[in-house]
Length: 90
Image (tube, rainbow, N blue to C red; front, side, top):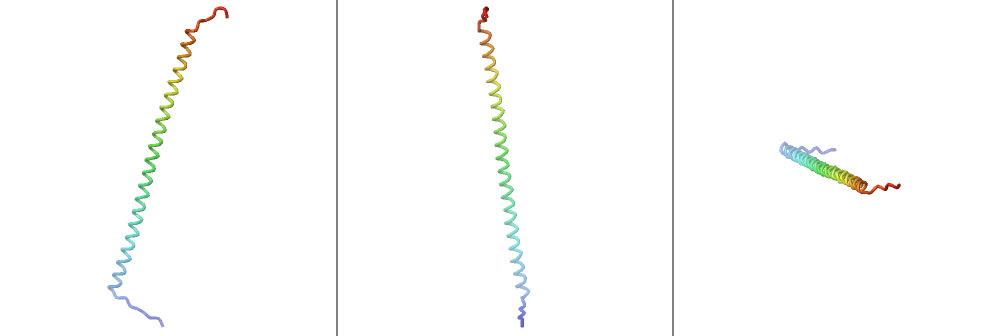
């Protein structure tokens, strides 16, 4: 024979409030986890963007330095060729 236990209306209200409070706490925890994940993703994205900007700007500086070095080398070679005496007996 099963025992049927009746729950008073007040106890049902208290139990329902407890369930709702637990559900609200779980929802808040999920929401906070989502916010933390979004902040982490944005932070990583900003770091990557800054790193890429630095790499690109450094590449431009390196290319500029290389170009100026090539120009100087050509100018030195042309100046050397102009100052070199030509031998008439070649």
